[in-house]
Image (cartoon, rainbow, N blue to C red; front, side, top):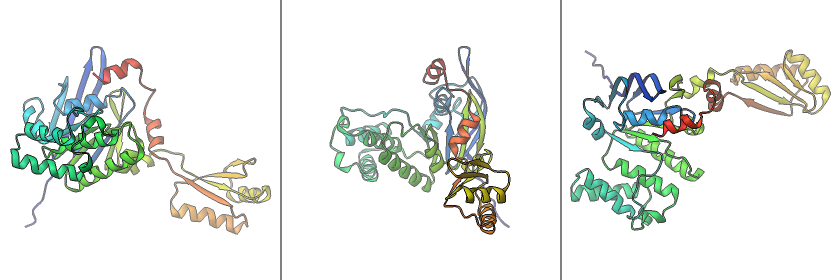
Length: 323
């Protein structure tokens, strides 16, 4: 007899609602986050991303809906949720007067790990996050990237299986962002679930197994990065030719294409797959109209974001989002 292994969702949300005064911030949200994956929530400022994270992390009560986080109901069992999760917010929650080691030790004490286990956990995190040379320095002397690494290390002191990362790389330089990405990949490889909010579309593309776009309090689209990109039209080949005669021959051979005589280019609709590329190049070869240069453009998450989100948030919406 074959046994079936079932995996409970790390986060399950149905009909989640939240308002601030007469402003609807979350308007009937449904989503599921599978254990051991990265789920990215995208959206413009004021869309409700931080509000959702605060609700899921028990920092803010919802106005309606059903929520399960790490198998616990935040309303009836907030301590169960808090024991299972870690949260890294938009700003590093570290004491800048303490050293790196003292910050981590303080977190170990708050988790009641005991002296020996706390020291072992602190030493392991300092090594993992490449903070050894800075361990005895006050946090105020660390770079922004080092402070964010310390912030995430402090989140991991309690060994959470579900981590909320609320715009964790905002303001970091490219090297520091990539270092954070690698840490996230390593955590997921160990079975940790990551709920990520970000405005960096390349970050979601790099890390997320599934992506949801939140706009004006609603999930407007959800899927894998590839699924979302396929929903956006506009993929094309851009062909550039050496002279007007070759451009004429290519345009005649390909038929209805977008032509730019000044740039000597043709834009040919295409989804960018190998078969369609071979068809175009074969047609041009038979016509004796070989292009000098070819560029393939396929829709990216920028196209998805702009296609599915509305107007930029107003100042009022941003204020509500950060409450």
